[in-house]
Structures are given as C-alpha cells and as structure tokens.
Image 1 (cartoon, rainbow over the protein chains, first blue to last red):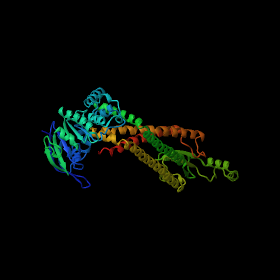
Image 2 (tube, helix red, strand yellow; image 1 turned 90 degrees about the horizontal axis):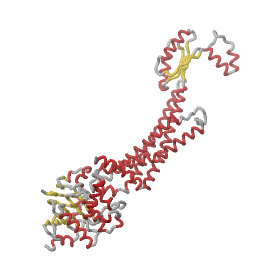
Image 3 (tube, each protein chain N blue to C red; image 1 turned 180 degrees about the horizontal axis):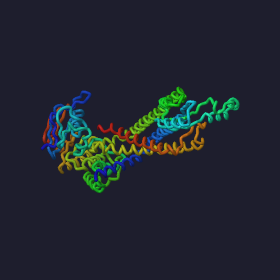
Image 4 (cartoon, chains in turn yellow, red; image 1 turned 90 degrees about the vertical axis):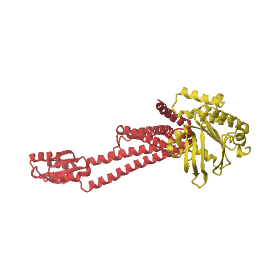
Length: 231
Length: 299
C-alpha cells in the first residue's frame, strides 16, 4: 500500500502562478525519494502539500491514509503528528536549549518527564549530539543545528520524514554528514522524501529521483541522478 | 492522566512565559493597570452619582391635604387606605395645629397674625406627608391618593419632580455609558498589548504547529497568560483606588463640599469594586490573549 499518493495534483497560487500541473506520484513505505528541480520549479510546493502548509487547487493528496486536500485547519495536527519535518533554516527556538528544542515536540503528548527524557536522549544520540544537550542553538555550528532539527523531527518516531532542502545552508562536507544521518533513519524503516538541489548528494546516493520542471513532473526514476546526467 | 498533565503544562508555560518575556509582560501589566484605574475611578463616580440622586429622590414628598371637616375616624381610615396603596415608602400625619406651631416658630411676624386664630378658626388643613418607593410613578400614586374620600387636594411639586427625574436619568445614563465605554477601551488596549507580546512569539507558534500541536494546545497557555497578566494588572488599580477613596472619604468626613452631597461609605462598595476590577482584568486579559493568538494558527 502506498504511504503517500498524489493524484493529478494542480496547485495555482492566488497571484495566478501555477506551481504544479497534473502531478501524480506514489511512494511506498520505506522508500527514499529525492525531489529535485531548479529554483521555482515547484518542488517546494510539492513538499508543502505533503505537510499541508499548502492545499492543492485540484486533485488528491493522501499522506498516511489522510486526505490532506480535505483536512480542516484545526485538524492539521493529526497529519503532522505522523510526520517529521526538517527545514533548510532549522526552525529552532533560540531561547531554548538543544534538549528543550527536541522535547518541545513531545510536550503535546503529555508524556511523563522520564519518558520525555528517554526519548529525547535517544534521538540526540542518533544524530550524535548527546553531549551538547545543554547548549543553545547559537552556540552550535550550522551542521549541528540541523542535527538538532533532525532529532526533533524523529523524536516521536514518525513513519515519514520530510526534508525541505536540509543541506541548503551547509558546506559539502557537513551536507554529507547530515545525509548520512538521514540515510540511516531511512534504513531503519522511515520513509524519506527530500527536496534538494545538491547535485553531489543526489548522484552519490542513487535513490529514486523525481524531477519537477516548471510545475510538471518530467521524470521519475529508480536509482536516478541529478537531471539524468549520469543515467 | 495525559490531559491533566497537558493542563498543568499549560499553566506552567503561562507562568514561564510571563517571566521569560519580562519586559513585554511589564508593558502589558502597566497598560492594563492604567486603564483599570480609569475604570475603577469611573465606577466609584457612578456609585456616588447614583447614591446622590437616589438620596434626593427619597426626599421628595407627597402632601395630601385632608378635608376641613374630617373626623378622627376618617383620618385613621385615610391612613389605612394610603398605606394599602402600592409604591408607599412611609406616611406621616401632620395636624393643622402642628403646622401653625411650625409656622409660628419660623417667622415672628407670622406669629402675631396666626395668634388670632383659635383651633376652630384655623384656616389650615390636616395633612399626610407621604414618601414613595419609586419616584418615577409618583404622579400615579398622587392621583390615587387624591381619589380617596376625605382627601381634598394633593401636592408633590408636579413638573419640577418630573424634570428632576429626567435630569437624573440622563446623568445616570451618562455614567453608565462612560463606564461601559471605558471597559471597551480597556478590552481593546489589553488585547492589543497582548497581540504585540504574541507577535514576537510567532515563530514559536509556527514551530508548535509544525510539530503537531493542536490549536487548543497552543491557545490554552496564552489564555492563562492573558488571565495572569490581567490579574497582575488589576493589583495596582485596586490598591490605589480603594485606599485613595477611603482616604478621601475620611478627609472630607463623608461629604463633598456640602452635607447634601454625601459620599458613599467605602465599606459598602469596596468589595464590589475589587470584584469588578479583577473580573474585567482577568476576563479581558484571557479573552484578548486567546483571540490574539488565533490569527497565528493558520500556518
């Protein structure tokens, strides 16, 4: 069964720009999918549809059995609890420590504090930041901040990890470190969808690659490369 | 159990965030305090205006003049009939002899003239002085008294009393409008200040939404925070207005310039004012904050 399914999705913004045009994608459990495309190609819109930051103008978006297109604003949390989301700009709260930033995502479940501590430390261990749990975001490097953000995304053990240009602000070496972590999470069974325009990463990992150009899905290949250069 | 933990978490978050955003909290509290002082002062004024007007209204009396030939039996009967009417607060008999004696005391010139009259030739009439419960229907009550057999004529300052009632109604309405207006202004100011406080936490709300917090989970701590700011903001107005009014009351011996304008005893109104100010602070603070956070929940 498909974990994520887009059926003939169109997205037109209120200013008239068409971001996506008749896009259909199926993603099964455990897959790792790169979504690539140039700036303003529509890949970010595609990612935003998955976590209901945007709603499709037409067509169906199904994520983990939820019809995202019909999801009411006040029910969005039900979808987001099934997802982990990682952003290019990390979206950490500067006045909270590393530990508090990760625990923040668990507060909503009303867990006991020892349960929270156990889960947070486990997530921080996975991203290799267990020692820095008392630091504040501005005391960390970009790569470390992104790792905190990944820890926050996976602390609740979601089925799907959505990454929107997670290496966009990082140097090539750090990008590879981050990719290693994301790849490991995928190997443990989490489905990963990652929007990127990092050629090196896409070509190195050889995963399924979906290419979007001017809002149209132009290619969808298993073990693809960046713009099919090495295909 | 989880829900209880989330509930206490909300309260804890509210306290934390008041201290974490100390400067903005102080700004909110000061703004709430200033507007609530205005509200409290206007409420105290309104109490005093009401008390002053009702004191004056209570002094308005219907004078029922009895027929000259009435017997003692009829006098008693008339009293019973008047007492049985609606809207009667008190009734007092004044005989024509008492009237003459009073007039003599008031004026020495009159005394000589009035001395010529004996009890039989006294030209005055026995009267009943009647006070009413509701001054607005005094005309109707006067008419009913006039219809009683043995009552010849009734006077209560017709025209003047109605004018007085109208003027007092206008004054009372103005004080109510001022109080309501100030409450609305307070609501607006408080919710705007809290809006600014929340604006700086837009990112926090956005991230909460992204990690799967439900809208109520996000809103409830803000609700408590507003409630707390409102309660803290009402402390200074309560202390200032209550002690200030008690001091004024003592200083002026319970009256303003003249014995006619009596100030309301602080003991009678202070608890009402405390309740009113806290209630407005808390309700407006909580709702203002709750409403302000709503616009950030559409991300």
